[in-house]
Image (cartoon, rainbow, N blue to C red; front, side):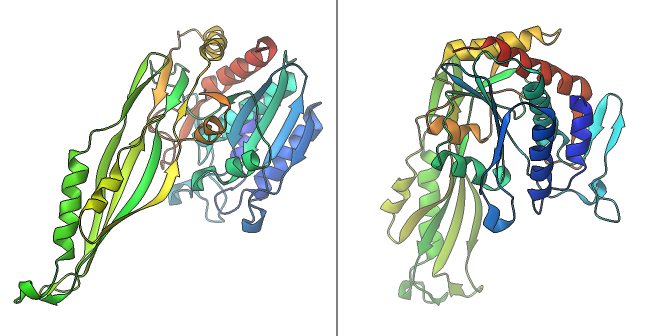
Length: 365
């Protein structure tokens, strides 16, 4: 079975409500088709996620991990049959269906690479649960001792420097989502002096957010700039009542080592700021490793790949935060993941299998 056939099998197993069944398939396939030591943990089992899947083979002074995830976001109606199965189509050199790009195509490529590789190091395959809901599996694995020296996270890196070119991302932004809550005192709108307008306090906080400088940094010669934006507002109860409460949501894209000083909004009377989600950014700190992955990518395709940066968070952020040097190299192109027309290039699936296999055979730290 090659990586394309395996992609078809993985995509055919629904994994948006529960990824346990596809996790079973991955575990069984690795046991049946590789000489790796295979195990399963208990990540997300209380939510019927079925646990992360790991495979390990080879030995050496360093550990190289090929990391993916086997959960997907809910499919569009057009991606489901009447009986609830996933629709899979192939045309014009691409495979279409929920999870093809994010990220079962790359997962299949990594599984075949584990089967075929004769690693120069200790090679680990890891497929996590719950990536789409905040890194459930990655965080569980890290908390329970998963600490490879190096990792290739197989999220999308194709199409950044050129169409169909599989690049190597050396950094990505994180995301911090937060809430600004302004409290006031309700009063009749005809007697404004009797109350405190929570919306006015909220807009004072918005002025502070608007004037914040965006954090920036450099990673291996690549500039990264974060952003901060107020994205939602909710306040007021009636046209003739001064509002006693107003809430704002803030989307912040973070860069390694930096955060915008959003706590300044609490300088406004009656305003509180709370962090709801903080997905960490990623930065590769080992240029030699980044170059080794780029060399493998260069040898696996006719185009010339480049080091690039990604705009959004992945499980690489959790691994990087825990001390693993990471890069991202995978099949998904910008704009493919989570869409009703999600697809992956068959040629790029094969390319990524070559990248992973070549890197495992050549990288010894």
